[in-house]
Length: 150
Image (cartoon, rainbow, N blue to C red):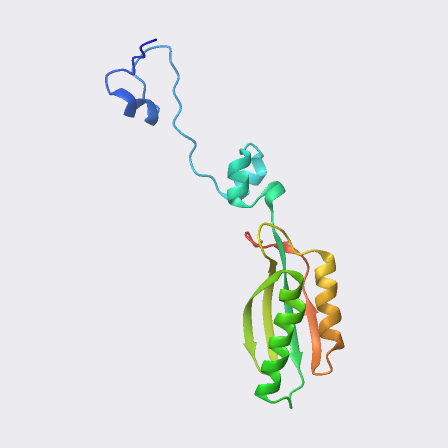
């Protein structure tokens, strides 16, 4: 078994990149990087890309805004919001966060697990909201990065 010599300060010096023997270059462990640096360099290992949700592990979501008629009661508004969540969101394996008060509602929609909202999901939400007579206006935003907004 080969015996290694780590210098006067031992293994701690090796970790810090301060080796004490000549001709040996030691580098410290990788320092933390920002997401912009990670995506710009492209030198990050797969495990870190997965942890940071970048590259092939990027997850997309979209913003959904809608308004109901002004004369709608609070109970009717709650019924529309509950139906939207159960029929347009949860039925397609989606999650939403946000909310609102009568007459406006604003949520951000993502998908359960490690996957993204698709264009089909956006169209299904838009069709569901357009089919409701109580809903006056609908705005569905573009697909954006759910973890690192621009």
